[in-house]
Image 1 (cartoon, rainbow, N blue to C red):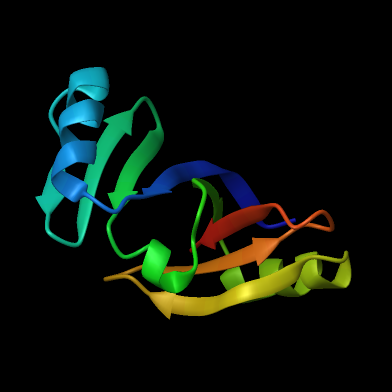
Image 2 (spheres, rainbow, N blue to C red; image 1 turned 90 degrees about the horizontal axis):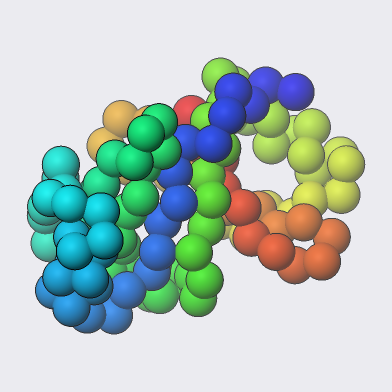
Amino acid sequence: MTTTGLHSIVFPVDDLEAAKRIYTTLLGEPHTDQPYYVGYRVGDVEIGLDPNGAKRGQTVPVGNWSSSDLDATIAELTAAGATVTEQPRDVGGPRVATLTDADGNPFGLIG
C-alpha cells in the first residue's frame, strides 16, 4: 500500500463563520483562513472546514490519507472493493480523491 498516514479531516460546513468561531475556540487560531477553506494544525493532522463540501455531496467529515502515489493507491483500493465517489482533483498543489468502503463510509486520499 502506498499510504503514509492520516493527513487531514475535513468537515463540510454551511456557515463558515459560525464553524470558524467554534473550531477556533476548540483548536486555536487557524493557519489558513480563506473564504474557500479554513485550516488548523493539530499535531501532524490538518483539521479543515470546507464551505464547498456539501456542494460536492459531502455530508460527513472525511479523513484523508496521504499517498505517495495517488493513482496506484486508488487502483489498489478499488481492486479491494472500494468505490471512487469523487475522481482526483487538484486543490492547489496536491490532488485529492474520495472513495467509499464496502459499507459506504467515505474516506479520502491526498497525494
